Image 1: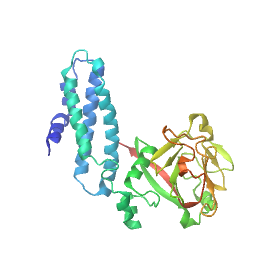
Image 2: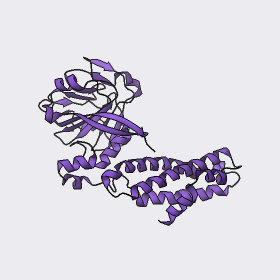
Image 3: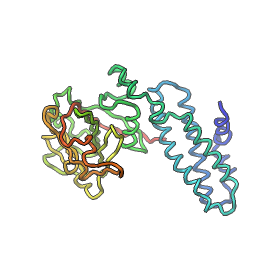
Image 4: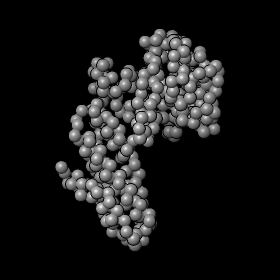
Length: 317
């Protein structure tokens, strides 16, 4: 056990002692920052303890996701601490000690936490594995998601607060890309995550909480979004167009927005289309947004199509 862990144990194993030691007569805002930071640090330590007890990627995958979620919260809290001089009118020495402590925690994260793009197997490594091995590592039956890093982003896009589980409902090549069969069997099995791979190499998709049941029927969904896995970018619905987030039709697998993304039946033989961005937004400012969703191909042939039902199973740490 290293010095940082010893310090964590000494300071964090008894949250009641933290309150007695740190919460006394300083300003309320400082007290809240102190208490929140140490409570969060306790969760961070326990998460590292879980991760370090198990080296297998499969068994530690959920801890990886949870650790990254904790780091996002910790970074936000740490930034707040760094900008708290204006409330430290009495030169509270505890704030300086806490800044030093958060710096140590931050270094522990950077040096030891399994973060995206660092400790996940690379795409090159994943592609050397058999299909069954890839499915086992990812935990889902997908040929469109290539890496755990991509799966991490999907998980965060779906919910930063809950753990998600994906159940494959429909895979285009196995079902002859038959939209009639999809609507007959799975229309009401929502929420849906739709993954698409086009013949130009673009990998993208969308999410909706609403059903695809109906005929040329616009439906509202404030949680709907599109995404691109090549760029690892999420494209949320414009609040002005929430009432037209999707358009249900039995002639299509899916239709998001005002032709932002339309996947027709038998899309492996006939062109589908995208006029993105219309009702969905590209928030990145330094790129050309038009048709960025599909790697700048407004018309495309689909190579693979996967439709998942999403389960939100529990709250993340």
